[in-house]
Amino acid sequence: MNKPTILELENLIKQHPDIAALGSPADAVSDDWLIKAEKKIRHKLPASYIWFLLNYAGGEVGTDEIYSIYGMNFEDINGGDIVFQHINRLKHKSTTTKKVVISETDLGEVFFFDYDTYNGEECQIFVRIPSGKNLLYANNFYEFLAKRIKAYLP
Image (cartoon, rainbow, N blue to C red; front, side, top):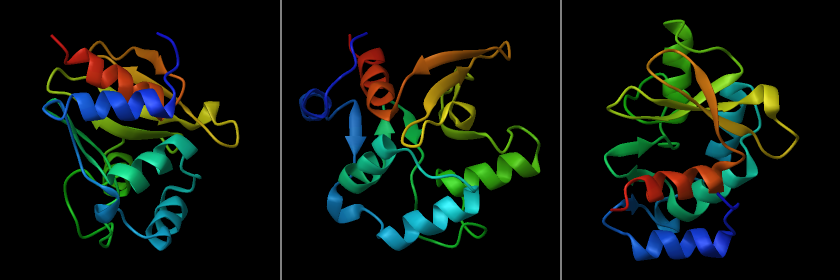
């Protein structure tokens, strides 16, 4: 797949609101919450993911929640807050400090930022398939989001 531009991704989102049920900039958390999240997970959030959080806040693609930042105490919430999910998964030893889960499917696929690939701005996204094998899925969050939307197209 060619790497999508931001404009191509925005058009894909606009063309498929039935698949990409995302929020808006009005729903986005403040920069303070982004900083708190980065401190808690001990990693800088990838630039493409920050773009998503600021422009769409969060939401679902198909039936799969894309983890976001809820803007609430990370230990007290539940659901698809990326920090809550990371803390919980570390506690249950289902991830490592270098793998930050961003979404999972009903089919058992788990998508995550792999901070071993962090280049100062972006992380590659891998998918852990039900067999336990990790496969490269996308080079950044833009590509991830475009591929997830396209996976639901007829």
